[in-house]
Image 1 (cartoon, rainbow, N blue to C red):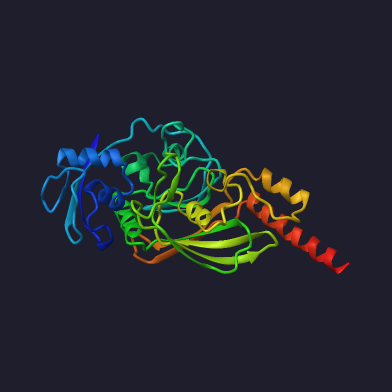
Image 2: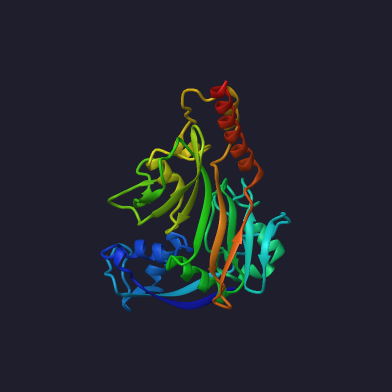
Amino acid sequence: MTFKKTREITVPLDLEGERLDVVAATLFPEFSRNRLQYWIKQGALRFEGEVMRSRDKVCSGGLIVLEEQLDEKIDWIAQEIDIDIIMEDDSIIVVNKPAGMVVHPAAGHKDGTLVNALLNHFPQLSKIPRAGIVHRLDQDTTGLLVVAKTLVAHNSLVSQIQERAMERQYCAVCVGVMTGGGTVNQPIGRHPRYRKKMAVAPERGKTAITHYRIARRFKHFSQINVQLETGRTHQIRVHMDHIRHPLVGDVMYGGKNKFIAGTSKKLIKEVNLFNRQALHAQTLSFRHPDTAQIVSFEAPIPSDLSNLLALLGEEDLDTLNTNVY
């Protein structure tokens, strides 16, 4: 079954002079680059009414029109998998994703994903683009995701993401003691050598803005609250590594855990056993698609991360007691 609808978006100033396929991928993040390029070739995605090539440059203020052709995902099967549903109504579902769960099927993860679980609980999602998924979390990042149950809700949520109106706050633990909060405003693009990684890319990257503030300083680590202004792939992980405070457990970006002299053997052992990036999507706020009222949700810090924070606190206490005596 095929579903069609037309969407129109004006090219913002920060995408002035970019390729059409790059602009399309930025404005329609819920679709893959390959699908968007296919629609460009078919004339289903046009700029100012004209059929263009993917590599053609576009100017800000121009109108992009997309006639979506959405096939039902018959290859995305429903599977009986438990999921933590924080809230559900006629239009949206808010889910607390566990560590280790991929959001939607892809190469290497054809099933066992959040989408497979959602389709089991809500079969009608097969008729919504990408089964209602409008934003993602990395496989080993825990926390909140909102899923659209209707096309109206899907359009509303995607628009809010594009307008940077959806607020997402994360709890993270970084290596090293930060001196204060701040903002990282560095564009992010695909790593030039390692295709599975992203990197700060001043010349070719997309705008990426991350705000962070210190929640608690430990002797050798920092707990921070992070708020995303944009939502690039691996954004928090890339930006924290860029400022030399990689996330605990992030092997892809931080490499092997580094410890400051004086760290106890117990803490070194426990940190090394923490086998994922220490990142949790803790709060989520957006306009409800039906009422336009702001709704907010919070997911408790998962046990593995709360245990890590408790251990870091114990290390500080042990150090204080040693200094006293």
